[in-house]
Structures are given as structure tokens and as C-alpha cells.
Length: 134
Image 1 (tube, rainbow, N blue to C red):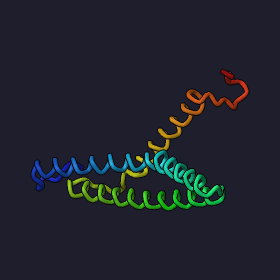
Image 2 (image 1 turned 180 degrees about the horizontal axis):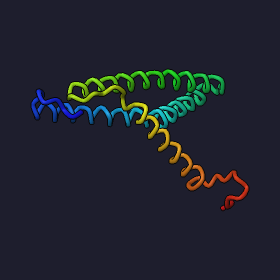
Image 3 (image 1 turned 90 degrees about the vertical axis):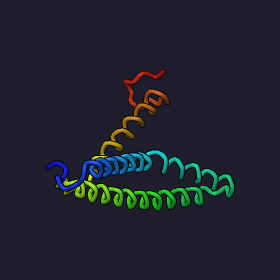
């Protein structure tokens, strides 16, 4: 079903723009879950280790911070997706499901591919016997 006939064209355009912005925010937040958040907490854990000399404190702070930040990120992403669904309905679409599942699937796939490229091609960390050694 297309945009609703009772909504002015300018309002429909603004609603569609807002939907696009929410999708971009979902994509950025989803990518952050696979890169920025874990790397940030690894860096913070490293600073804790440098200050305390305790590997236990390092791991505890990094893990607890990572889990808490990830839960917060998922909550924010869910709210963004609910807002996207609401805006799509306001624009006249029969939106039953959000886009978050697809956004997370694509971002996780992209993160995995980028990790494999980094690990095998850029870092040359070959662990499979038949792969080249240099």
C-alpha cells in the first residue's frame, strides 16, 4: 500500500526523510555493536590494566562495560525501530514489522566479511594448513 492520500505531499516527503534518517541511525548503531563498542571497551580495559596491573580488573571492567553498553545500544536500536514503524504507518504504509532484523543481519554479515578480510589478507594470520604462509 502506498502513501496515504489524505497526507499532503510535503508532509509525506518529510515523513519519508525521517524514516530514512532513522534507518541510517539504525545502521550506524548496528555497526557500532560489531566494531566501536567492543574496541572501545578493549581500549578502556587496557587502560585499567596499565593503571592497576591486574588482568582480572582489566577483564572485569571491559566485559561489564561491553555488556552494559551493548544492552543500552540494543534498547536504543529497538526504540529507533519502533519510531520507524510508527512513521511508516503515519505515511500510510501497512508496516507490521521493523527493519531492525534486516539491518542487524546485514551489518553482522558486513562485520564478519571485514574481519575475515583483515584477518586473512591484511594481518596474514593463516591458520588453515593449505593457505600460503607469506
